Length: 102
Image (tube, rainbow, N blue to C red; front, top):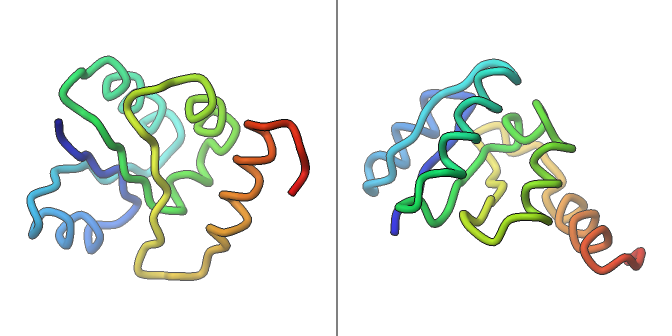
């Protein structure tokens, strides 16, 4: 089982490669959707790490994939900009999953 990174910048990709995680730098929604489709079919990928800016390219699609698919696990990570509210993102995800506003 492998990790894979979808990033909006080279710095995050280089950092992850130092610990053995391969990945791709993406710049638009079309690239993201195409790559995600391929990763969802790859049985060797267990966890897909995505920077916050990548998640912001297609938040509804990613949220739906998180709710509907068991594998791979889609995880949002902060990038070098560090200006995100991942806690709110997690709250929204859990609220949708259980149907109760937290």
